[in-house]
Image (tube, rainbow, N blue to C red; front, side):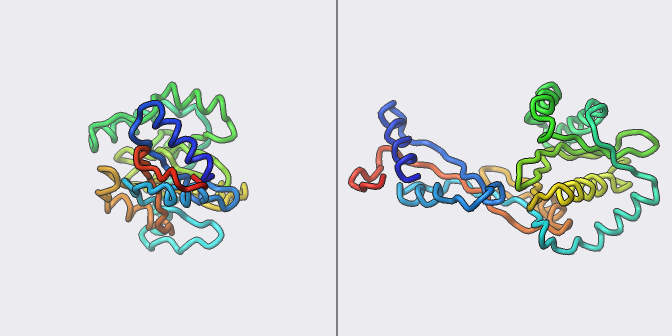
Length: 235
């Protein structure tokens, strides 16, 4: 890895670039321990320019969810909220997602509906949609990426009825059960940061942690190609 990262750095310097940015794959997505790349960043004098905080459940030793989450699950059950897998509800869910992102952040989802459906068709075992329904109406949902050993909740959203009735709790708990049944090790909610990690969305992070999650760091590095130590035989 020292040779690889050093060669990449020299290659881009020769192309006229002054630096390269690198996002290290978090350990929860490793099949086996493999953080040699982070060590290579250190050896090359890379600067950590961003650090994000994700919320992750270790499914082998999950912390107990907060009491609020258990109450919300019971409420959803009383109201008849049910989980449903499959892509037939994708348009209804995407409408909920887009409306919430527009109202709260004035942004669009990173993927269009067409793109996410295409991904699901290309990788049917790895990209799944789970929705919560009440009276046969979609009230919440989430897109899940299954990348062993981790299940990642990429998108999740609920309308007003879904928020009130505990629809998101149904989504999270059912998808956690899927991860456990299929032998995954981690369940990752993703980071809750803005402005290159300098701002943490506290309420969002607390919501994720309340399901029994703990903090996982997502590291970002920048290599200054012009300041590489050419005298290091390993780089």
